[in-house]
Image 1 (cartoon, rainbow, N blue to C red):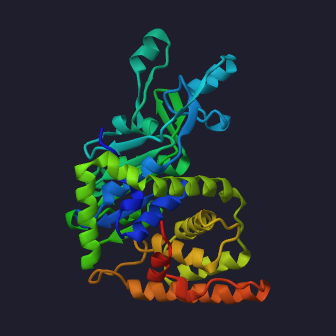
Image 2 (cartoon, one colour):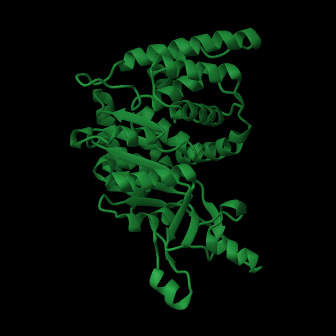
Image 3 (cartoon, rainbow, N blue to C red):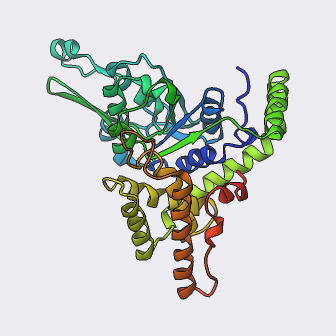
Length: 372
């Protein structure tokens, strides 16, 4: 098997890379939808992220990758073995990467219970599906807009609950289903229904890079990779390891990241000013802002964290009119975020002599200053 193209070798597309990394830091954010032209490194980035993630500890005999250190999330089989007092071995495995085909059915996704065997022999037999394979890993869906809406709903429900529960004829089976959900699509081939769009926590719209220098750099790196994948990955390995370790440190720091009432007011005001329906965006921004602070090694979120999170949480939630693409442009959104960050910085300066980040750090400049 050829070496995976390194995540840190991907040229540009900083917003997409940020959305993926922050979901890796906090897998409870709720996934990311990447919309863009063909050939813009969408699937490459998803595969590369999975290769970055640390190994996971699990029971050697568990089909669902249960975490030995979190008994409350164990599958039905692990609970029963624990009750029986079975001695079990643990092992370290690579983070799973599962590619869901567009033709996937409900049974293929959630798994199946053998009702006939249960009735005839009184035995419960469960055949795992995609959600079991993806537990504690990354579930990638290419052309998610072409997937059956009902299947997408099941995936999003499981991602939100962190559990997959299958019930048939009074028989039930449950197993953990905690994964990073990454969906990609080309808008030219049709869009998702608004209800499904909103269920994706973050969204990124990407286009092909227009700068000549960066396009040349893309060609040079891909040619080097195609010529000798192993040597190319070896060249980028130090940066890959640095980023992987930074994600691991951020995961440990995340529970200690604090936020203030002022932060919550800023998030609510921004959502209200943009007339965003529902409250999911507010929660997503808070989770993402905390993940960004943890990624940068801080224990308190700032206006800049909120601004960068808002850029990822709002694009697919801004109301659209029947004869226009959106009621607010990307430039107007960036300006509102910048004003928010500026106001937050002033508020932080009043209570902290060290001050806070300036509004000018938000938006594209923020992308350029952050090196992944």
